[in-house]
Amino acid sequence: MDLTLVRQAIAQGNAKFGEAVRKGDGAAIAALYTEDATLLPPDSDMIKGRGGIEAFWKGGLQMGIKEAVLTSVDVSGSGDFAYEIGRFAIRIQPEGQAPIEQKGKYVVVWKKASDGAWKLHVDIWNSGPAVK
Image (cartoon, rainbow, N blue to C red; front, side, top):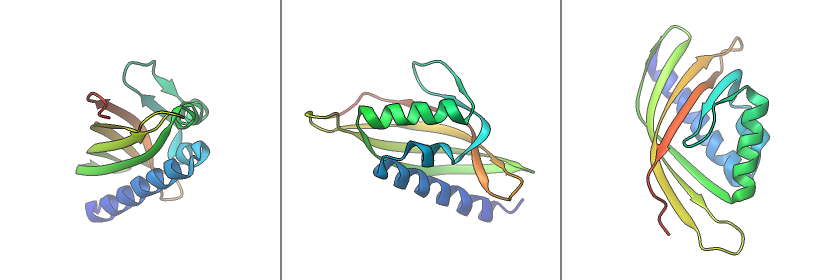
């Protein structure tokens, strides 16, 4: 495994994630995950599969998520799996309300797909209190 190439692929995936959030495109976010991915959002049930993940992100976008910045801190792995530890910052602005910034940390297990693309396979995060 060439970790330099994996880090580049993950950085590109994170950039695509942020772009899809800014566009309000839940389907594009979900497309970054494997078909059988698992999403582990804080204070929520586990979500299994791309369809459920798309519904989750569409709901978040409808609630006012407007921007997401993902920053890798560490990437390692072996074979067709890599893990990423990182930090995130999201901006949430429900209609008619002041924007809120939420920051936190995450761990993603990435899986190399049959086409060579790296996709999110397990995604878990934790956040601190929102700041207005």
